[in-house]
Image 1: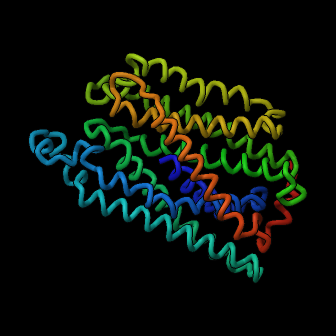
Image 2: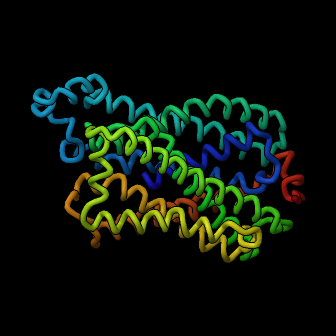
Image 3: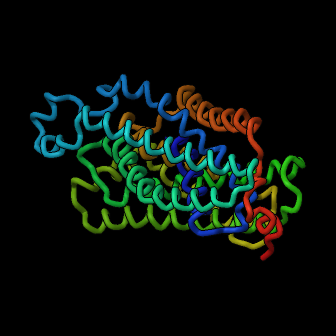
Length: 343
């Protein structure tokens, strides 16, 4: 889910730029396009899960479902055949839009054809509804259905908030790093940094708002079929993890990015973007692991290995892909205005 967050969130940012007609972000769009290529890797990462469905998902056991009223009622949706169809559908939709949008953008580097921008605007407008549906249902299928008796109608939005932050964080880190190393286009100034910092700050607050809304509504309703999910994360060593997680994902980033100088400081941005990526990994850990380790936090070489593997895949794919394309969309008619952008 971490790699999916980066790849899918990056493609969403590309689509949003086309639809909104944003200018300031044009020089950085190719970074997001390159990161979107992670969507080509995601299906391979899903293969081990698919071949171990019975060990991962409780609802795949037909004998359990037959004796469970709630699971029986959910079985038209939660069954292996329909699950497989949905997963394949997500991959096809994401990869198709990645291929079409990135192909038009890269083709424009050579022919400067402005009609390609219009084509990508139309493709992006079509993609957004598919994005909203697929990111919601993929979060429900892959994570929420780990505990099939529990449900939250805001779960998809919660995952979207983390996806947006993580993809924006890695893009910001790469832009600042490449610019400081002299490997990016000249003309980038602190005004561009400020836009990244302001967006990160805004979505840190948005994530906290959604997280608190989900908790508050369930706490207020106080229904046993909903509260057990939070109670499990509020007992034993999970209580310590949850409190630390709140500080890492919200409190510290809130104060670290609240001021204007902080949003324009390259070193601060690089540090906080790595911080937020770690926070998103903790977020996914918080959502998934209590299902398999209800008696306490499980931290060992396996967890550390998955953490390093996820980060390694992201940077490896970016390193390989960035060698075959321009780092900026040199054929985009908005490029110069984007470089000259000033607040």
